Length: 372
Image (cartoon, rainbow, N blue to C red; front, side, top):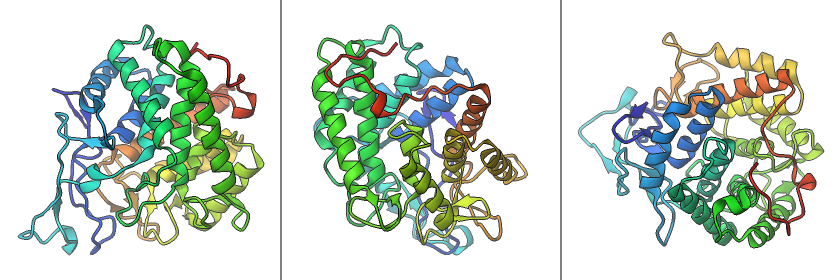
């Protein structure tokens, strides 16, 4: 799903295929999301497809640039920024699911997790980026500054909620990721890298998440600050190294999310979500693998992998009762989840993993870490 002239990777090559038959969540996915793009780079890195990396990174740096205001979270395949949503009233929609939409108004949203994904991908590819090109160094430094400045602001979250902004835990965690990786890169981000200030901001984010993101009532990290709602996006916490997977709080979170949001091996994003979200289901595999639960992780992986359709492809979601594919198809997110979960299982079997150590074992914040 790569647009070869520019190097863009689209979320899906389709539009308005419904997340729920007869429902209204029928979005246009024919664009490049920074989140999807960064996770795609991780998947390519895992399977040693390095030839594509320069082309894809080139698209990201050209498209994003940096300007004042909210950082766009998605772009057209040529870097277009105005993706205003339109209704096609003359079309009935798939299985009568209306509206039929062209464009996607998520481009207007603040999604603070967008700061962390590029830095996380760059950290994984640090040997490939050595020496780091000046435009990439400038982009990563700018994203770090945005994370330090904006992490405390509410946002729409990675599921792109269209009601009120909230203090989503996964968005805070990804701001922490941006700052953490920037501290690790240290002087590799140039003479303007303010590592001590970034480390202080990183530690402030972490304290806020541990204090306001945890629910004693649920015995889990929750969707947003000061709420008891569960959300599968917090499974990212051990995957980015915010806390180790064997931490008691993470183990409890994994257990509660699996108990409350899972059905027949498919994990919903939140309570009330009508279908299993494929990448979240593979995130559960990764978390189990990182926690050392190899048998359970492997069994769940096999069950999920068997749910591909007759073409060997995944849509965005799967109906947990009928097994029907839902949402746009094929979905980059879903296949990224499969590849990265397979990589986590392989790393576990080989006794290795590239994730950074837990924060308790990091070097003192006052020291300048480097990315080697």
